[in-house]
Every structure is written in structure tokens, then in C-alpha cells.
Length: 87
Length: 206
Image 1: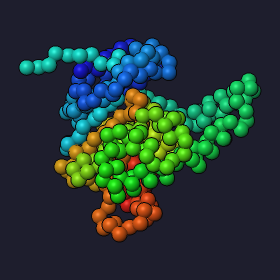
Image 2: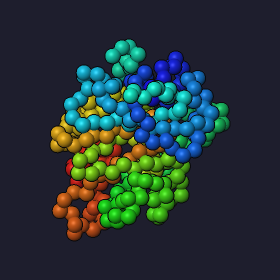
Image 3: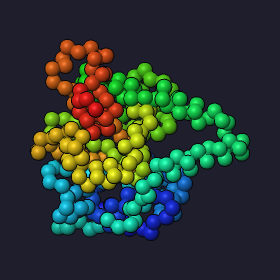
Image 4: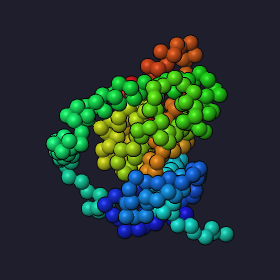
């Protein structure tokens, strides 16, 4: 998945450091989840929520910390864009 | 890093003033009473405290079946225990536990603000909401952990959970060695809020 880089609005559940980054879906929660308000960047109506797994190098590049490390973020579907899997 | 992530140095003071002004306004308009905020705070300070989390961790340490269930279906596992009503509400709708093991250390953060599992850990500590902690814990967790006294073996995997969605995460720390004969009360003393966030180990002074 690639994380969207939608224009920011007053409120968001998308951490800025994940914008445009590529991650792998680790888990999809059962059911759809609304957010208590429409944020202006795509969430509000019920939609699936995913746990997306990121490699530190994908986020921080050469400045990523050494050692085994995985970062997981929980993201509403509106923040995810499917990408073609590399063969 | 750009100015996009800059924040004013007096942010805490300014936020406190804003919160106080908002409370006054809500009281003035009759939306809440002068006691409302104090009552809500008192509820979380007395009913929803790290004591709940400590009980869950100790149960997981002494009951392998529960330990397995708590990381798969956390709310169902918690429902088996004798807790006050409301464990499933107020920031506890989607509790998720992650367990530390010999080669894996979990760290829970919220880079956006302060998502925190209130029912099991109480209200979030000040430092958890601090922008410096939030950003550094995402970027260099091994270094941050070492700075607070959690020196992990180089081959231990760190899993950082950024609570940016709907779940509220907490950590089941590893049971310290040499505690086989401990009573539940003695074990609970080893489990700190910090250990259940992942910025300390169980039994480590914080």
C-alpha cells in the first residue's frame, strides 16, 4: 500500500511522517469504523481500518536506526492506496 | 524537518489556559456544571487506573491460556475479569494488548496526540504527549529506550505501535526471572505504567 498525501485539513488521523510511504498490510480489523467527525481529508464515514507495517528505511532512509525494528500504524482505508506488487 | 512540525515553547502553558477558558465558557453557558470536569477526572483517577492494567498483566503471567487470549481478543479476555463497568468505553473501545517475548520488545506511542488506553492505564502521563518524545520514539526508539534505562540486546526486535487509528494499545511486559514464588500482590508491584507502555521493563525502577 502507498499512504496518501491528501491535502491536510484542520484535523487528521494520518501521521505526517507516513505520507507517501509504502507499507504492507499486517491486519484488517473486522467491520467498518466511523470517525466522530468528517475531517476533510477523507475519514468520517464508516470504513475499514488496517494495521500497516513499515520498514524504518522506507520512512527515514539512510538515517533509519540500526537494529531490527518494525513500525506499525493503524490507518483508515481513506489513507491507503493500493500499489502493484513488484514481481 | 520543516516548520510544519514546529511548536511553540510555551505550548503547555498556553494549552492549560485554553482548557481553563473553555471550561469557564461551558460552565457559563450551562453546558456543564462547575463540578463536571473534576468529577470526570476523579473517576479516571480512582476507577480507571494502572491497577487494572497490573491485574491484567499478572493474570497473563500466571495463566497461559489467558496470556494467549489477551493478545488475540483483548476485550473478550478482559471481560472475563472482575472490573468496574465502563472498561469498554471512554477510550477503551478497542483495547489491544501486545506481549513482549525473549526477542521482541513492544513500544506504544501516539505520534498524533495522546491516544492512550485509559481504562487499563489511567490518564496518559505528561511526557507521553510531549512532541519530542512522540517524534523521537518513532524515529529512534532503540536510542530513546536506552536513554530511559531499557538496554535491549542488539538482536531484539523493537515493534513500535503508533496508535493513529482506533485501537488503544498496551504492553504485557515479560515476567522477571526469579519471581516464581511471588504472590499476585508482589507481582503487581513489578508492573508499572511505564512497563505497560514499553518504556520500562517489569521490575525496573522508573
